[in-house]
Length: 298
Ligand code: ADP
Ligand code: MG
Image (tube, rainbow, N blue to C red; front, side, top):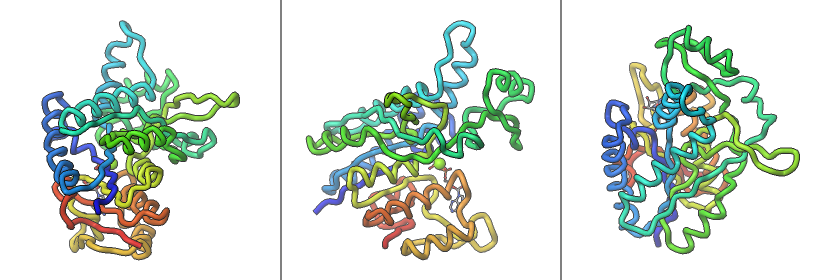
């Protein structure tokens, strides 16, 4: 029996090896990622795909800024939806199956404390003078080692609102791409309607939520390292292979996994298994159809 596998593709799967995001490089990177995905589908597994969108949103934001005098800039939630469509199109073109991409909204709480403390950097580095100019327009900017970057809230994903559409398409044998970039963050307003917000949702946490919503048995988080590592960057790095959720939780609490990179992947793996998923795997793109990587089970 095949498994139902949700694969979350990291940014490295969608951009060139140097992180550049030229269209030809994005297409080539997606095609090589889909070669790996096809191994899983051809082995009889049912696959659902999600992906990051950091470099692509960064490019759109920059275009918006540069063209602001000519074309009205669009908000961040619009940029998120645009990248879902573009990356979804590239993925669909690279798969020889019936495929569909769902523009996916993820519900967040307007009272989420993240809104009061925006910490997630987006877009490129700018000079302080430029940062100050955008601060006057109401944005939050912070100084990093390499310059100034815009920061936005990264609230908790509460619900993948369009997961029911994903399920319908899966039942009709579609390979579905959904919740790209963590989904477009929306809040429910007083009158019950939904509105997009200027925030970004962690794609790994959203992937765990989508994986539960579509009752996946396996969550695979494909990134640019083979394993989560204890003592990463230190003198005695130890890659983690098979591990129980309980053991991984202890390492996570001890601070072994950096926030904003490996931390959310470990958190997503733990949430998925805790929520009833059979296994979560953190591995490289080349490892997704094998049995390497960090494999988390109850
Ligand atoms: P993605 O685009 O796939 O989400 P990220 O850059 O967010 O990739 O996360 C993967 C990165 O996490 C790795 O390239 C590595 O530099 C970093 N990292 C931080 N802590 C660890 C750790 N403990 N083990 C392995 N990688 C880690
Ligand atoms: Mg990441």
